[in-house]
Length: 346
Image 1: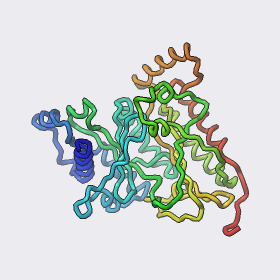
Image 2: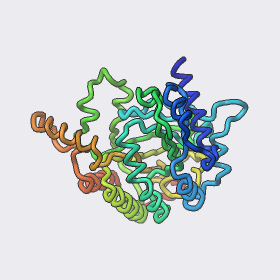
Image 3: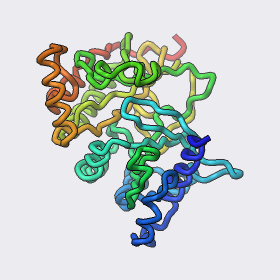
């Protein structure tokens, strides 16, 4: 019951933040006091609303009315639905009732501080210059302007990103497969050192996937994908980011899901496999771990000490941004198989 109350309160806070007149908000002493002692409710506001709006409208072609309609209540229903705790980081996910957008919490300080202070402006500039980028489209960043007791003890997150849902269009009868892929030749201490009794088997399974097949595409599609990924990983390398992943989706080519939201992009709309069996979608996710942040530096020292004893090999969080980008591109390249396209109906 308490969990449901927190979820409903958070949903309302997100909804109000997206419809609030940002210019009318002013911090007050009374507001600080009232906010601090609230364990469930939290006030959220948009971070750099101007930049986010420009990206949505001018770069990605997402209509403001369509965007806001995804977060409006219909017939009194709450517009966001919980998807559960989907990762080791403790992030929770919500999806809009129309499934067009996801809301992900960023509970770890080193992640949201990196995104807010180091990456947000470069991300906006990069996505403006590269509208075909496969970096996931982050349409809003919401944060709490006041410190609250609930956020300090972890009962509610004070930082959230709103992003596109790469699985939009999926129905219950669709046979979709999803893979969260990282270079497999790394040892992942956040997965392999964590006692299994502390996390569910479902969460452990989600920490790293393997794709035991090939992505069969034409030479032209391969060259286009390679160029885009070279640019995207180059940007992440310049930001000193590591541990990001390729979120790969495939479903039978016979399935015709609803078109994704915003400007067309081949790997968002779906690329048909050269053998005519599958349709692929792909985006880059989770680029919030920065090598220069204090937590990452501390973890690097801890893990390197452990590695002297355990000899577990290279690790994702102790590598350099340059090496991680190189290994990431190698991983993707190893999954590709170039074929001539098979005509429809063959």
